[in-house]
Length: 306
Image (tube, rainbow, N blue to C red; front, side):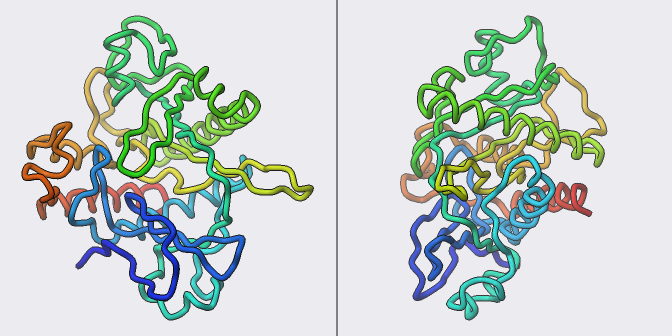
């Protein structure tokens, strides 16, 4: 089984190529085409080989959550059916099926809206040093992977491709985008996380943390309306742990990219080697790690959706 590393849609205009998604303009002035490839990244490095079917799994789980959580806040999803998309996409149906979304064009808000329910990852690293997470004080003597009493909204900057996002405090985020918009986003993000985490828990999964992205579209009276954009609650943007065997005080096995990150570090990756051990060579994931990553992604999708 081969991975789709790059979409190939001759005649269409590629307007953005992200770590995973290729974004195209369409004949509809109000819509964009999002294509989820099988590319995978870790530590902001795009690996040379992908994970077969990963784009389809990400699309499937995003569509599930867009539907399930649409009562909390509207989102950008229009259709995943190529037959309902602009006619110029019809010749590419085989390539797009299961991995493409037609979405509303939105003005992207330059903020990563991260919600954390458990003390792990960069939050745990910061807490060990200062007793804070994104500058927010937490109770003393907490341990790794411990559940946080109330989910924390912890924003970061949204960096350009190739640059690193930077954790910032709620105060900095509020200054960056304005207090009113910040309050709307933080409240929506907490509601989304809380409902998703409760559902995941019922399926035997802990949603430790996740990242949301938001945008603005014109409302019925021309005013800006906040919507949810990008992907939603995928293993690329979220930390999922198995509920069975969970024990605070240690790191947890995961259904997400942590497995790949651990392999990459073990293979010799460190800051400054983003282009490979030999500059320009890049990083190629071992076949066993490709299959192990695919298995983890498939398992969390099956558990959540069935």
